Amino acid sequence: MADPRDDEQLAGRLVAVTALGMVLIVPPLLAQFDRTDRVFGVPILWAYLYIVWVIVIGLVALISGRSR
Image (cartoon, rainbow, N blue to C red; front, side, top):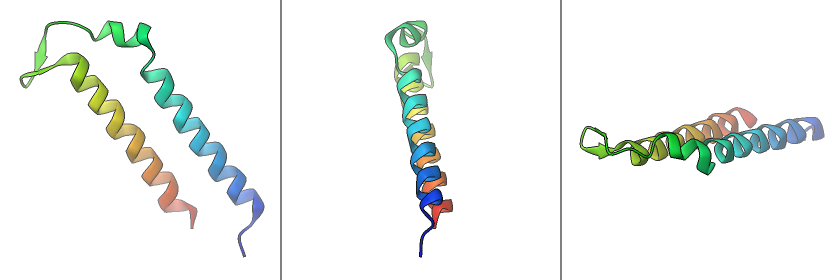
């Protein structure tokens, strides 16, 4: 049977990842990457958004994989 504290820790970690994802895509931070430069032919803003997306998904997968 699952321990309620484990569920609370899992929920807390997922909330923390959500908060991190939201902080990384706030407009003032995005404005820092809104330039005409390119990385491997991709605009820096798009590259940043994809990197943040991959990091958030990776963290959720890592947290979920350890949960049970």
